[in-house]
Length: 322
Image 1 (cartoon, rainbow, N blue to C red):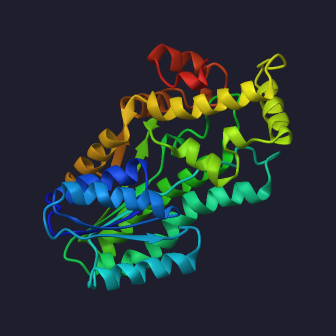
Image 2 (cartoon, helix red, strand yellow):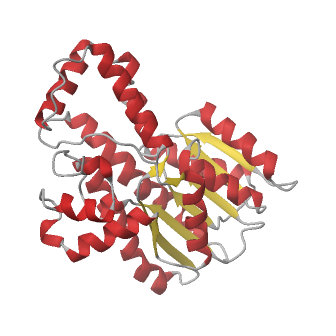
Image 3 (spheres, rainbow, N blue to C red):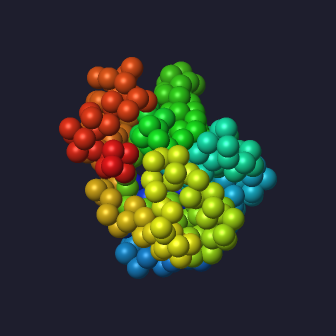
């Protein structure tokens, strides 16, 4: 599938970030797009951006759905079939994700499971819902977004990162297993696992909103928890006021989005180039490539403090080494 014109693509998490940029680049080529997200407002903005740059006749549809809810996913699928008047799709981008549930030990079970169910369950449920439509096409491709946390379950030795990492490992394993499954049972359908490094998206900001932890709205009780977490990482914030912490956390979230080495648009281009080339493994960003090499070179050290030395030597992931 080296040309997307006239094809039908389904994108989860299409309201912002890589999902939005995938939609924009696909529609610019004349690909019809159906997206879902939890934010109707964000999707409407994506839709307007897509239509402004798309050839006449390109269809762009939106549907509000939580990808971890099977009934909502099935309703999304039915909407795609109806609104695009189709019995098939060609591309499924399981892109939706959220951060949270870092500690299996101390974070609330509900937050842990919500994160896991969105990041892994969303991939599974949408794959289940849309696979028959992919198989019904003359050429299909399922593209599942994992992460560098799908081969390195860490943000550094001082930051628990369990729910997201566990989900992304599951996405990676599932997609790799699909390669043989599809080759035997649906050889015209391909599978790719996407493993981005640090991409300039609003995932930190959006996750904070989802879990009612927007920095400006944090309560004194929530900030006390933040202070405790920072203290465990060896950071003394006793001299910082609550407002100082709120401002600092907001700046951190914005810097994650604005100072990333790879933009969401660049990431989308890398992903689509990988799909055209039928690469089953798509690393996004030089930091992803470098980290992949380091984990393979030093697997025993990957979760020890000494791994910081290897990261620093490559100039990778400063937030895990500072």
